Image (cartoon, rainbow, N blue to C red; front, side):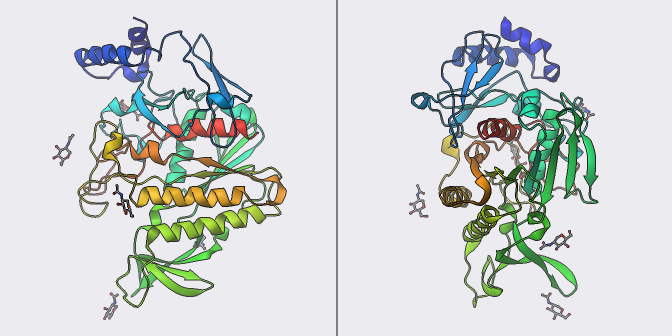
Length: 416
Ligand SMILES: *[C@@H]1O[C@H](CO)[C@@H](O)[C@H](O)[C@H]1NC(C)=O
Ligand SMILES: *[C@@H]1O[C@H](CO)[C@@H](O)[C@H](O)[C@H]1NC(C)=O
Ligand SMILES: *[C@@H]1O[C@H](CO)[C@@H](O)[C@H](O)[C@H]1NC(C)=O
Ligand SMILES: *[C@@H]1O[C@H](CO)[C@@H](O)[C@H](O)[C@H]1NC(C)=O
Ligand SMILES: *[C@@H]1O[C@H](CO)[C@@H](O)[C@H](O)[C@H]1NC(C)=O
C-alpha cells in the first residue's frame, strides 16, 4: 500500500505504464527488494574508495551522512547493480529551468521507464542526492567540470538537481556554451564547465581549406584553455576519452610519433587507449605540480563512459533503443572502454602515491561499470535530430547520469 501511495503522489509517474503492468512490477518489486520504501532501515553503511564515509539510513528514509571509520562494513560504491526504484527523479522537465532541449528526452517521446532505476552498491545503499546538503558541502567553493560534452552533461545534471532548492544565476556562457559559469547565491557556490576535447593541446588538421575532423594531439602539452583557470578552483572534475576515437596524429616533444586509426603505414598506430593514458599522465602531473592552485584542492577523476551505438555509429545509422539496463553478461569488460577506465585509474593511483604541491587530493569517481550497463539511458532518437542521427553517447535528463552527482556528493563530503 505504501508503495502505491508513493507512486500516486509522484508527479513524474502520472504518465507511467498501463496500470496492469505497473501493479505487476510493483508486486515483483516488493518481493525482490522489500527494503526500498519501507520504514525498515537497510542494514549496512557505505564507504567510497577514497576514504571511509559512513551513512546511516534513518527511519523516515532520509539518509544522514556521518563520519566514522567502520572498515569491516566497507562497501564499494562503484560496484553494484541497477535496481527498480519507482520514486523516480527528484526533478523533472517542469522543475528544472535549465534542462537543455537536447537532453529533454521525455519531451521528444522517450518512454519514461528508464528513469525508474537506481544504482545499488553491493552490500549498502547510496543515498539520494539531497540538494540542500550538497550546497552546504560546497558552500563558498568553486567547482569546475573539465572535459568534453559529457563533462557538460554532468554539469547540466547538477544544475537540475541543485535548482530544486536554489535558482542558479548564469554569470557567463560563451556562444557555443563550451565555457559556462553559474552561481548559487544561497551558498555562494560557483559551478563551471570548461571545454577541452583532449585535455592536452590539439589542433584540428585543415585539409584543402576544410576542417578534417582529425587532430594533431600533443600528448605532453597541457591545453592552457582550461589549465590557466585552475587557480581559484577548489574542486576540479576531470574527464576525457571519446574524442580520441577517430583518425588523430600523436606528438611528443613536438615530434610526430604515431597516430590513432590512420591509414599511413609509415606511422605506428598506438590506438586510443595509449593516447588517453598519456593525456592523463600529463594532466595529473601538471595539476600535482600547480603552485598557484588552492591549498587542499580536490581533483576528481570521472572515469570513461563509452557510447551504446548498435549496428553503426553517429555517422552511419547506429541506434540505441534498449528499454532496460543491460545485464552484466551483455557487457564486455575486456574491450577498450574498460581498458581506458583501467588506465585512468592507474594514472590516478600514481599521482595519489607521490608528493604533491599544496595538500591536493586526487580522488576517484568511477562511473564506468554503472554506465556501461545503461544502454537505455541515452536520448537515442528522442532529441531534436539532425536528419536521422541517434544520440547514444550523451545522457537524458533526468537520467542515469544523475548518479554521477550522487556519488560526487559522497566524495566531496569525505574530502571536506
Ligand atoms: C516534459 O515532459 C513531458 C512528458 O513527460 C512532455 O509532455 C512535456 O512536453 C515536457 N515539457 C517540457 C516543458 O519540456
Ligand atoms: C583554446 O580555445 C580557442 C577558442 O575556442 C581555440 O581556438 C584554441 O584552439 C584552443 N586551444 C587549444 C590548445 O585547444
Ligand atoms: C586536395 O586538393 C587537391 C587538388 O584539388 C587534390 O588533388 C587532393 O586529393 C585533395 N586532398 C584531399 C585530402 O582531399
Ligand atoms: C530497435 O530498433 C531496431 C531497428 O529499427 C528494431 O529492429 C528493433 O526491433 C528495435 N528494438 C526495440 C526494443 O524497440
Ligand atoms: C581479453 O583480452 C585479452 C587480450 O586483450 C585476451 O587474451 C583474452 O582472451 C580476452 N578475454 C576474453 C574473456 O575475451
